[in-house]
Image (cartoon, rainbow, N blue to C red):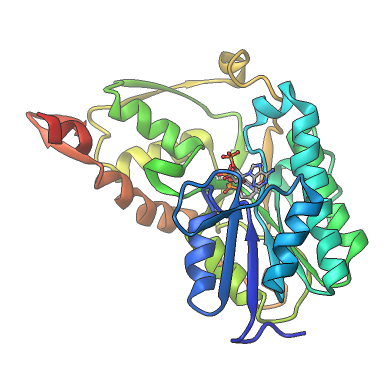
Length: 318
Ligand SMILES: NC(=O)c1ccc[n+]([C@@H]2O[C@H](COP(=O)([O-])OP(=O)(O)OC[C@H]3O[C@@H](n4cnc5c(N)ncnc54)[C@H](OP(=O)(O)O)[C@@H]3O)[C@@H](O)[C@H]2O)c1
C-alpha cells in the first residue's frame, strides 16, 4: 500500500526531541493523531505504548494507514537503573505497536539507534551485526527485531547522535553544552574518545516523510553526512555561537564522567547510510550544515549584555 495524500498517520511518543519535527512534516501531507505520555503540546493526546489495550483502542478509533512509533525512554542512565521500565517501554512498547500494525494490516515506522553496536569497528553499515552494550540499546534492538519479525511492511530508521528540539526539548549533547555556556561556564570538559554521526531531527523527519512515500520498506541507517567526536561537535557548536573567545574546551576521556554517565557506551557509533545511498534515497545533509541551522535556535536564546551572554528570559527580568 502506498501512503497517499488521504492517509491517516498515528504517531506515538511525539512529545520529545524528534516528535515536533515529525508532527509538523507529516501534518502538511496527512491527517495526524499525535500521542505521548507527556502532554507538553496542545496537539498531543495521551497514549502509553506500554498499555496494549489502551493504545490499540486509540489506534483503532483513529483508523490509521501508518503508525510511527517514537516512544522511548532515552536516558541511558535511567534505563540502567530501571531496567523493567526500559524493557516495558523500549522493547515491549515497540512490540505492542508492531502487533497493532499487524492486526490493522498497516506499515510501521520504528526509530532505532546507532547505540546498538559495540564500537569495536569504527564504521557500521546497515548489515553489520548489532551487539548492544547498555539496557537502553538492548531494548531498542529488541524493538528492531519485533518490527522485522512481526511485519512484512516496516521501516526501521537508525538515528545517530540526535540534535534537535531546541533549548526546551533537546535532552542531549548540544543542549548540555549550551546550558553550561548559558550558565556562564568558561571551561567545558568534553570527551574526544567517543565517535559518532550527528542526526538533525528536522532533516531526519523530512527524510522519513519522503521515504515512506516510496514503498521501499526495510531497515536503514539514517544519519547526517560526515562524522565526528563529541569534542569536534562541541568545538563547531561553540564556533557557530560565536563564543570561541569566551569559552575554552578541556579534552578529557570518558573515565572523567564515569560516575555521571555510567551506562556502557560504544567508543564508536559511526553509521554509514549504505542502503539509502545505494537506493538513491539518501536525503540526509552534512552534520555541520545541519548544526549551523540548529545553532540559530540557541543564538536567539542569548542576548549580549556588557560583553556577557545571558539567557533571553533573564534579560526580560533585568
Ligand atoms: N535522542 C537520541 O539521541 C536518539 C538517538 C537515536 C534514536 N533515538 C530514538 O528516536 C526516537 C525519538 O526519541 P527522541 O530523541 O525524540 O527522545 P525523547 O525526547 O526522549 O522523546 C521520546 C518521547 O517518548 C515519550 N515516552 C516515554 N515513555 C513512553 C510511553 N510509555 N508511551 C508513550 N510515550 C512515551 C517520552 O516521554 P518522557 O519525556 O516523559 O519520557 C518522550 O516524550 C526514540 O525511539 C529514540 O529511542 C533517539
